[in-house]
Amino acid sequence: MATKRNLALTLIPLTLAAGMVGGIFIGKYLNRTTLTPGQEKLQTVMGLISSDYVDEVDLDSLLNTVYPDLLAGLDPHSSYIPAEELTDVNSELAGSFSGVGVSFQILNDTVYVVEVIPGGPAEKVGILAGDRIIKAGDAELTGASATNENVFKHLRGEKDSKVDLTIVRSSSEKPLNFDVVRGDVPVLSVNASYMMDDQTGYIKVSKFSRTTFQEFLSALLELRDQGAKGFVVDLRGNAGGYMDQAIFMANEFLPEDRMIVYTKGRNFANQTQAVSDGNGGFIDEELVVLMDEYSASASEIFAGAIQDNDRGTIIGRRSFGKGLVQNQTMLPDSSAMRLTVARYYTPSGRSIQKEYQRGDDGKYMMDIADRYSRGEFYNVDSIRLDKSKVFKTYGGREVYGGGGIMPDIFVPEDTTGITSYYVQVANKGLLQKYSYTVADRYRDLARNISNADQLVRLLPREQTLLQNFVSYAAANGVPARWYYINQSRELILNQLQALIARDLIGEEAFYRIYNRKDATLKKAVELLKDPSVKKPTGSGTR
Image (cartoon, rainbow, N blue to C red):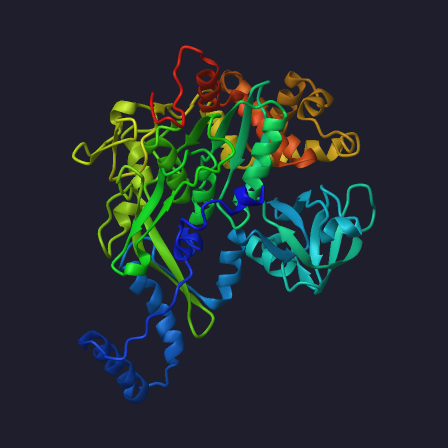
């Protein structure tokens, strides 16, 4: 197993193995000893401001306002990160951070504990899911102070530092106080893995963090032990992360000597490639990858490697289209710069980076909205492919570059049940708010339940649940309109049950219930079960 975990590191240059698309690619800042005319001009301007401007100016603060625009003028993904934001920006992909160990949600200006991380500091002192955090030390966390930024600021901190949390609990008449010693809290990127039937394993990967491959491999092995012969890897909404994690994941499914990804940059150090080593443990298992318009970067590297090697089937909608590689460099004041240093290419040679105009990212940022307005999410014929950028997969199929990865099987966005009533209650956050009130009432009864099906049976009957929700919505400004409610019935009930399950027994329970109505996932299971469909395999044929 140690060999599998090391994978193809000898085949991947260390620069690439440490890299990140849509995030971090640690490198060195290149000092230039000879100033160009432009650099000399900048130096002169700053000198004049320092010596002659009418008021005294803090040049560092002035430059801090310039750096973001300077980098944004290069491409949509080069960026400047102020020192005070760097820890939070990096922590989501680091695999862990130091904090109290709770997942929270802000509802009605109140911080609700959704989940207590097993083994974390909060669990050790007795904080429970359903608790409301009203203070951290002397800092109020209610009302206008109940913001994500403020909660992160006070719950996270240096390891072994202490914070006194004031908690409101439904079973206690008075607020409770807990002294919590902050510690390492894992940031999981595999949100769910379970058997959909006796032969199909499902894995939801939400991001590519430092620990993603280890989480992913553990999920694969566990599902195979449970009988999985085919896998659905769900990358919908996954905006990317560390590039090497996507490479390791692809390596598990590919035969030896298959290209996974390669990069090209102006600097020779950024011209790299990754090739499979043949030691993957899942080379013969059937594979389906789910994608949508928010699947980007490292997600597209994984999907591109699978598609171009004819190793699996991509199902869903066209991906985001980010094919640029960033190098993160620490600056002297502990801020950081993420500079685009290379483009990456899928095995067939395509760049999937969508078009952008340097210094003008307005159209680029509106691309998803433009796709929606022209009907791309609902009709495959509305997708604009650049037919001049045609490439061949390992098995000879045509694929296109220049704007994301087009799935092998298109599944339109499911609008079943979306009515004006549903939009109103969803926009006001009433589904989440009501789910939490229900979860609170059932928290003690559900304490020993870990199975989503058991939990659903514990909840009120569907018609009762729906009627109670409609009454709750009416009391919160959305009057009952049963014509539309009945059209949205299945959608509302499915989301309520999934949200209640998440609040009571965790994230995986949410996906187990929510996925039951998922049209894209249903298509994936049908494909894997259909004996008449010849699935892509490691042989590279269809």
